Image (cartoon, rainbow, N blue to C red):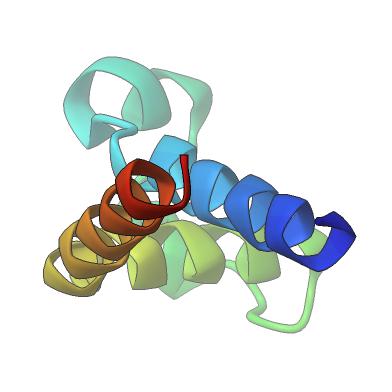
Amino acid sequence: MGLWTLLEGCLLLANSLAILNEDRFLAPRGWSFQEYSGVKRNSLKGQILGLIYATQYLRVLLILLNTLCIVVKVVSG
């Protein structure tokens, strides 16, 4: 149960990063995609921005993983 809970937590974190709206949330704080091109990509801010945009790019994969997680929960109880 511990590994499954950890994987679910990682999936929830990826979901939370994928739904961040660039116009409403990221741009007012200086975390827009235009800022990403100017920031050093090895810095902490650059790494976090890269992670956010990677999760937003892979939304279809997240949908599939969420569906798989729901099916496993329904089947296993």
